[in-house]
Image 1 (cartoon, rainbow, N blue to C red):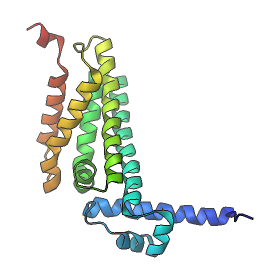
Image 2 (image 1 turned 90 degrees about the vertical axis):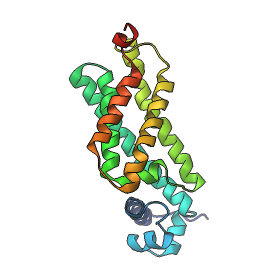
Image 3 (image 1 turned 120 degrees about the horizontal axis):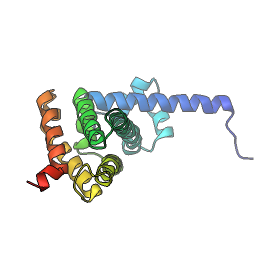
Image 4 (image 1 turned 180 degrees about the horizontal axis):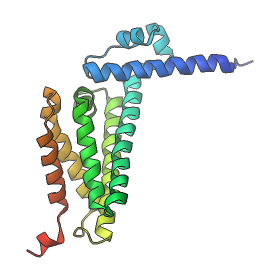
Length: 207
């Protein structure tokens, strides 16, 4: 007869897994991906390395789940900021602006974590989550850009391609500030100005 976990056992295992993910998230936010080790994560979670390996096959699988969780949180924050701005200001360009500003500001508040998410060399499993993150953020911006085109706020354009270009530009612009750990409000303003210029306006097309 196959062994069935009791609710108490499953609850204990779930709590262990949650502690491991929390410890891994803290580790990558403090030391970056390269500075994290399985032994350190297990120790900080209050378990042995053997227990960690009962939950995850290795560092790649563990941090892939960490990246998935953190990236989902960051995209949600950017989307929520865009939705709030659209409702408050009554237009979709403001939604793009708010999403971009929120993403950049949150990245600069956690530079080590953001650098790891965006550019640090990682395990292939983690890199797959990074690509999914970029796609999710792109789609978040593309939705607002497409709506801005539909309402006549900006010229017709491929919303997905425009969003992909903006996401790429944001990543490139943030690399040096994040690597040095500096906080530069002017960089955020410059990123936002670039974003709005890249979307264009009907005034520009009629000049």
